[in-house]
Length: 56
Image (cartoon, rainbow, N blue to C red; front, side, top):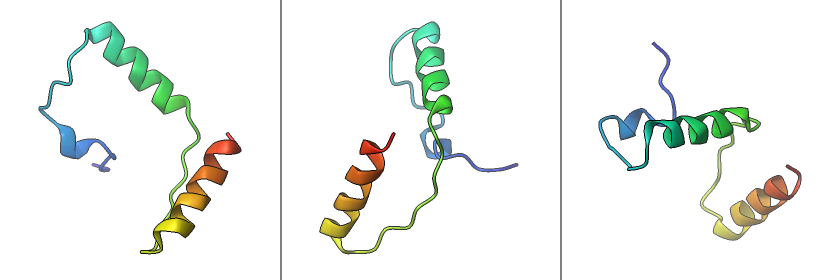
């Protein structure tokens, strides 16, 4: 079975109704998926993520 980004959060109830959680999950699933590897250069990583977010 493939591991998802949220597998570490299994069993955690973040609150909200089932409908609200499903709505958020659907909206997150609709976002573009990109795999990136960031280095230890915090400023370069922040600049990259800001540009990526601006292009959405």
